[in-house]
Image (cartoon, rainbow, N blue to C red; front, side):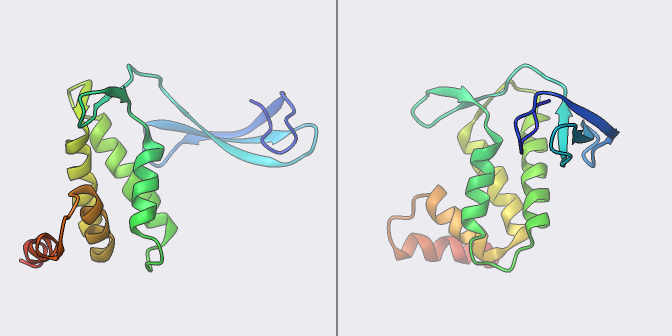
Length: 149
């Protein structure tokens, strides 16, 4: 494993244990060159999950896109970073644990909105406004009414 600080290709594993999600291994490593420590996570490589986009194009599932969307929705909200990480982990786990190896992006969007409802109501509305492409104030109000019921 290459050191992220100095680029040294040789690092030592100090400690290994199952990660919180129980689906990966958490390893603490130390660089022999610069002495800094860092953490890596090791996951089993599986058949990649394919996302079917609105225009019927297909691309490989990318956790960072979900993370970016959730972070954007939670921008300037009093949501702890740890809660955001757990939410993204839960979304990824739910998406990856499905039986299908191809999943529509619309289904992923619905899962994200469901998790955001529990995390922060304002973040949910922000995400929904972009995801559902609200055209005017009336559609925005309809979504708010549905959420409040």
